[in-house]
Image (tube, rainbow, N blue to C red; front, side, top):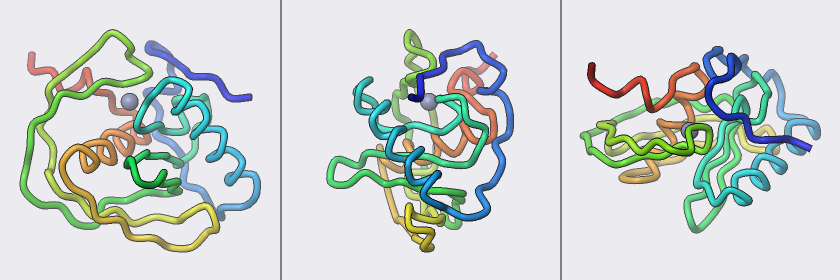
Length: 144
Ligand SMILES: [Zn+2]
């Protein structure tokens, strides 16, 4: 059973390790991550938010739930500012400027390469979750 990790916790600040191959084990972790995300009514979650230092994310786009290993932004366009929250920082809501359109490449739960084009709010969610894998949090965007 995986549990949500909240700030402050060292694992949220660590750079997560790439997944070599998506096996049944990673597939089960992704499935559990979706359960945790949905139980907190979130739209995205990174594996280190449930205590695992590996590059896995899940994003609920409304139509489908994307489960991606080793997500990487391969194309980016424009910019937009949106208010973002984070399940690991329950009391924070921060306006963040990010790319408005991103193309994300990674592996799906069957270890097949996938390319996802996304814009607006969901482009923000993908960038937010990939930030998590690099130990970056929304509070880091607050200008001093
Ligand atoms: Zn977050």
